[in-house]
Length: 402
Ligand SMILES: *Cc1c(COP(=O)(O)O)cnc(C)c1O
Image (cartoon, rainbow, N blue to C red; front, side, top):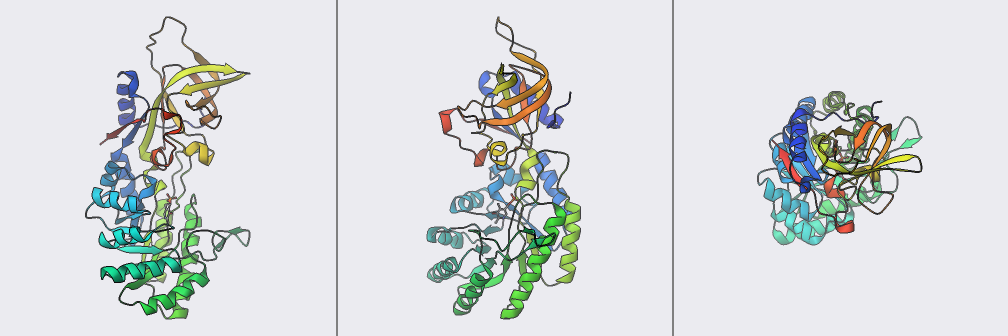
C-alpha cells in the first residue's frame, strides 16, 4: 500500500529528523526549515521571470529571520502587510526594498512606514489615501503610491468571476476614480506610480497569466481615461501550491513566458509579482512523533505530539498534509508497542477537538507509537497562522538546515 499523500523528504532533512529521534523527548515537535531548498527554489522562480518583472516576497507567508535572510538578494523586495511585519522585516533585512500593503492601515503604521522609507504604499481606500497624504505632509515626505484595485476579471466565460466581486480588499473602479482628485490635490505628498491587484490565491499559471493580462488592460484603459501614465503594475501573488500532489509545482516558466508577452505589449511598464506561499511552502517540515495508536469503531488513529495549533493549514484548507514516516526501532516500555499495519490511519494532534486532524484516513504500511512523522510543505502559513496557545502545549523547536 502506498500513502496517498506521501512526501519526499530530502536526505539532509531526513538525517536531521533522525538525529532528533535520538535526543530526549522534548525534541518533538520541531519545525525544520531547509534554507538551501528555499533559496534554490526562489532562484528558480527568479530565473523563470523576465528581467523586467520584479519579484517581491509576501512576508506573511513566513517571516522567520533565517527565511528572510535566505531570500535576500534573490528577491527584489519584501511585501509587508502590518506595522509589525514592517518593523520586523526592516530589522532583519536593513537594506531590502519594502512595499507596504494590506487592509486597515492605521495612522501610526503609515507614519512608521514613511519613517522607515517604505518604497511603495499599496493604498486600499480613499480614506487611506487621505490618511497617507496627511501623514506625508506632517513628515515632509512624499509617498510613492500604487492604488489597489478590485477590477472585473473573468475566466472561462462569465461563470468564473475573480475580481469585481464584493471584497474588503482594494477599491472598486469608482473608488479609484475618487482617488484621482485626491492625488491631484496633493502632488507634494503623493506620487501615483501605478496599480496593484491581488485577487485570489491558489491559481495555476495559465489562470494567473490571464488575470495579469486583464488587470493590465483594465489599468491601462483606466489610466488613459484619466491622463495618468501607469509606470508600474503589481499583479499580486496567489501562485498555487498543490498539497494533494507535492510533485506538481506551479509552472513558473509558463507564467514567466506569459508575463514576458505582457511586458512586450507594455514596454514602458515595470511589472511586479508578490508570491508568498509558493516561495517558501516546500522548504518547511513539521517533524514530530507518534504518541499513541488506537482503533476506534473500526478506524485507526495515530495521536501525534503537537497538532494543528502548530500547523493549522491542513485544518483550515481542508487537505491532508503530506508526510513521510521515519520508523524508529527503539521502544522503552515493557508492554506491547501500539501499532497498526496495512490500513488507513487518521493522524491527529493533542488537541481536544475533532478538528485537530493533520491527515485523514491515509493508507499506510505500518505506523507505531514512537515512529517519527515528517510533514512536508510546512514552510508557508504554517506556524505563524496557527493558534499556538490553545490548550497551552509547549511550542515546537525551530531548526534551520543551511
Ligand atoms: C497574501 C497576499 C499575497 C501572497 O499570497 P500567496 O497566496 O501567499 O502567494 C500577495 N499579495 C497580497 C496583497 C496578499 O494579501
